[in-house]
Image 1: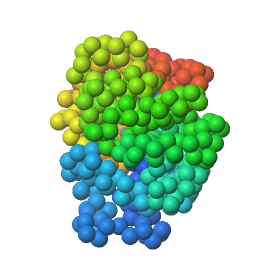
Image 2: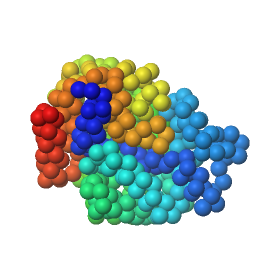
Image 3: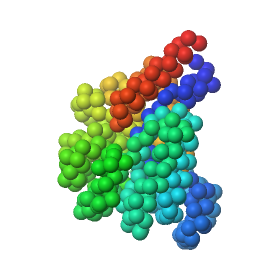
Image 4: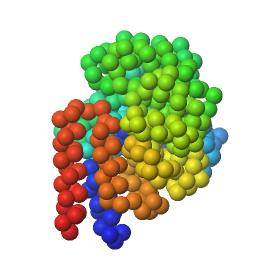
Amino acid sequence: MCQTHLHDFLKRLPKCEHHIHLEGALTPPVLFHLAKRNSISLPSDDNAFSSPESLLERYGRFTSLDDFLHYYYIGMSVLIHASDFEALAWDYFRHASADGVHHAEVFFDPQAHTSRGVSYTTALSGFQAACHRAERELGITTELITCFLRHLPVPDCLATFEDKAVQESYVSCAVRGIGLDSSELDFPPHLFKELYAKAQKQGLRVTSHAGEEGPVEYISSALSDLQVDRIDHGIRLADDEELMRKVAAGKTLLTVCPMSNVVLKAARSIKDIPIRKFLDAGVQFSINSDDPAYFGGYILDNYCAIQEHFDLSIQEWKRIARAGIDGSWCSERRKKQILITLEEVIHDLERT
Ligand SMILES: Nc1ncnc2[nH]cnc12
Ligand SMILES: [Zn+2]
């Protein structure tokens, strides 16, 4: 198939996105606009903040996950009102829709907002408004996931989890599950055993970032200590063949983010991401954008980057799309609808 046809096929492929931090959809122009409107001063001792262009240029030189997180937490300090959160998420959903996303399970970081005096309800109500609009106007179904910041003390995470407004959002199913993100090294999953046990007891779905910068042992700890349904990133899984076979047999979904891994130096290049090993071992994975405003691309850019470096077959793409549907936390009815679209796209392609 020629490149134009392939790009068209990848665009039409119905996608489920499982690994996108809504705060990571904050582009430099929107960041500067909100800083001005909300009278938030950006660091004056860092030249990167002199203009949206210089900030974007700095994003191209991240040296590690922590180097990125420094800018990520400063960036989100401009989010104050529910309408800011709504505009941010809506901007993401419009891109996602153009890229062929049918279902999106999106992360946000409550502690990064409550710690600077913005209430959980403010952030949640803005995000929810955008989710409802995405369903109404774009036909994208959504689930919200609260991520806990692993660099903060465990008691902080537990207190946030137990907070009345947070609990209400779980009980009402406004939020479907929990995740664990931020600096990975030195913050192993087992520290959060109590949090995850509580979440599961309440019937929440659970996932965790593991094996992004951290070693493969963090993946086994997330599986055994936290009993996660999914692993976010998980590229270090290829370092342990036995665990890789176990993950494949258990059909645990990895939410892989290729462009993120290269930009944050978790992988030297796209070709070093173990896509071929995962396919050969039968590991289920989806392809995601992580923080699209920071890593230079949305979900379709990530699909195209994988195609460019691995030259996958139509049937391999079908397997990836199918794994994304199976590993989603939406209803069985919704999964069936997306599956039908997938069959139609493949059928159309095979006819031409
Ligand atoms: N790639 C990533 N890893 C860990 N925490 C994050 N928060 C936002 N993006 C992240
Ligand atoms: Zn992430």
